[in-house]
Each structure stands twice: as structure tokens, then as C-alpha cells.
Length: 299
Image (cartoon, rainbow, N blue to C red):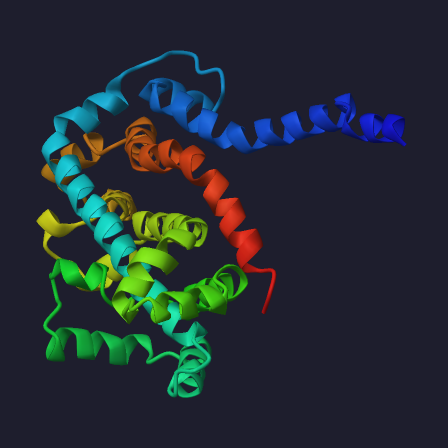
């Protein structure tokens, strides 16, 4: 029996090789982005995207540093959206999930139904835009990037399931007998137990905020409040517009198109955008996997 267990636990060269190849395939697009960001304009024009460019250049990165103030401002806005949006999501979602996990709460059933309705139906883009701009006056307001999506029904259900699975009712009752109020009970007892689910949902939320562009495209017209993704979209749109009108361009517009960011510049900006997520993922991977697997044990 022990021999069989050792055989099962022994390294499997074929499986390890397959996994290594799959990991390499996943890394190839990122490697290509890095190579293209250091490729010259002539090499890209002649050979397209390739792992072996004919010549190298720092032109793409020079563009990033040349417009460092604009990129830095967009970076700060994106960091604000990611940090503030993630913290608000974790706070509101965990409090809502804890309330729904208490079987003795009178409004538990009503709010659960209300939560499920929001998963199936939305207010619609036009209605939401009108309310956010005319009633709440959130046009060109950075709060629009963090408030509307602060609570997600899916995240609430995941956290509520995690609380059911990991926070016994006896622990809650013991704390209440010792005189703990609801806020003390939640922040000092329940919250520390919820760290895996908080880390998992926090990471997913942070990635979502970091990559989000649709809300910024709808509500942000001030370039000083543009996120990194919105800045990239505007660069692409401007270049596409100039190329479509190539036959009708004036001398000034032709010069603008000539100096427009080429592929290496766009890949350099893309790497700047991807950097924080690539750095953060290894630190959250353990909690991410644990939070998802443990939180999905019970329905």
C-alpha cells in the first residue's frame, strides 16, 4: 500500500512536461508583447509581430517617458479606482453577506430575494446613465468609477456561503453572551476568519477595476480623469480615425499620423498597464484558490 502511494506521489515526467508546455503557451503572448515593445518601426512594418525582429529600438519606451505626465496621471486615476473600489466592495459585500448569513434576522428572506433579482435584471444602460448624470451628478466625477459596482450579488453569495461553512453559530452565540455587539462581532471575530474569501474576491474585484473601461468611456470626458484603459482606447480611436481619412488629411494631420504611436509604443503602454496585476497575482494566488474552493463547498 505504501509503495503504491509513493508511486502516485512520485514526479510524473510526462505530466510535468505537458504542464510546462501549457504554461509556456500561456506566457507566449506576454513574451511577444515584450519583444514587440522593443522592436523598431521598420522591423514591425516589414515582418509584423515576430519573436525575432530584424532590428531593435527603444522608441516605444521613449514615447511612454515623453508623455510620462499623462501616463502617470492616468496611472493615479486607475490606482484610485482599483484601491478605493476594491475596499468599498469588500466592506459592503462582507457586511451584506454576514447579515444574510444570520438565520435569526427578520429581513434575511426579503433581502435575499431582492439580491437575486439584481442578478437577473438590471436598470439598463440608458436609465442608469440618466440617473447617474442628472440625479447624482456623477459626470466627470471619480466616484462613478467605484460606487455603482460596489456590491455584486455573486460576491455576496460567495461570501455568505463562506461564512456558513467556516463561522459556526456557536462562536457567534458565545461572543454575544460575552457582551459583544454586532459591529465588534463582525470586525473582530468574523472578519479575520473571512480572510481567504476577502482575498479571493478582492483580487477579482481589483483586476476588474484595473481592466475596466466602459464606465470611464461613458462618464469621463476630462482627460485628466481618464484611466489607463480609457487612454489606450482614445489613442487607438484617434489613430484609426486618421487612417480612415488618409486621403483627405491636411499636412498637419499627416504629421500627427506620422508621429502617432506605432505598435511598439502601444505594446510598451500595454506592459505598463499589465505590470501591477502580474506582480500582485503570485501574492494572492494562495488565498484566491482557497477562497473559491472553500466558499463553493456548500450552496
